[in-house]
Length: 510
Image 1: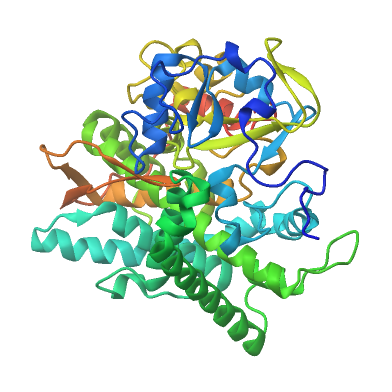
Image 2: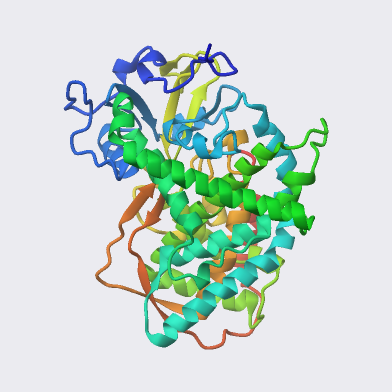
């Protein structure tokens, strides 16, 4: 008989909100609900997050929507999210979009259910791979991949061509995680078209999102061709990863990278090792999640810098001052780019590239003292709206302002209002890797180029579970040599040290 419950006794599959929220009627919903279809008027299946943001602005910090017989609760109010962040009462919920990725990622770090033992095993084995020492070892490889990007951009600048920012950032971040994590080179910058791995990855993400917008009973019929394409994409991803693992096992250990850890490291307490199936799932998880979100963050950051020349000039001046004419900045020099890091944080505030996370009640409880929830009831946190809550970020929350992350401003805000990497024990394990890579790359690009925006371009955001600017192209102008190295102004150094001590992503109370 097929298993019908998870390891913690909750029913498998989608759990509609009416089964877990006893007072669901108190939660606002759109006014015009259609029989059978639900709250679908004006909906666009290609932009569900942006649709949800529009509803959130009208309906408030907690609201609900129904589609094809499924009821969802959305939350973005700062006080409500702070309560959901309580690890004693709430845990990660593998929501519908994430569950749709389980055919490809299985019980990988991102897609595992809380009760699945392979999550804790993999987390404990791989966590040292993101230590400070490991990050310092990855740094030279990040520089090598960045040099391939700047070589590509130098040729475009010399020819007077614009560059495809999202496409090139995807190449950069794929090569970076492939090289540093698995000793593999996809040759992305030598290809006229995206590597087939990227094409297959985008296909699986798009298919997972499409499943959210199709009535479950009809999905098999309506998406028959797409399902076949998805199966082929998954098979290609599996073959690619299996070949990477086969070559490593044939050639022996690499340089202590993530793949070495997956293949050779025993759990520090139990002595258990990852199975070959689990290795495959973790490699796919890192290759997909490790480049897709970072490429989006870099693309959005470059867009904002191109439209805010005063912020670009300030960031560039910091790079020139801190790095000087050093050809290859060292690992320690990246953390000194405090304003550049603020640019990234502000970018992730406005457009967190992983735009939602779900939380479920461990036991019967009352959310923020107002909304009863039964055990297993869940809510989807709309991170872009949390990051725009005027009670936490002010009435100008829609504006791009990196000074929001100046140390004093960070200390003045309540906890749990900045969540670009999720929350709690299941927050992104690779966040330090992503932030170091993105800060390094932004610093390298800023000191090398002036960014020239297209005046006619208006930001469009494409969704494939993650967020990415659509159609963003920039012109480039090569800069002259940077200014000599020098000490930062004392007030900025003091502020940066305070900010480092209370990092908005990693401080203990987030």
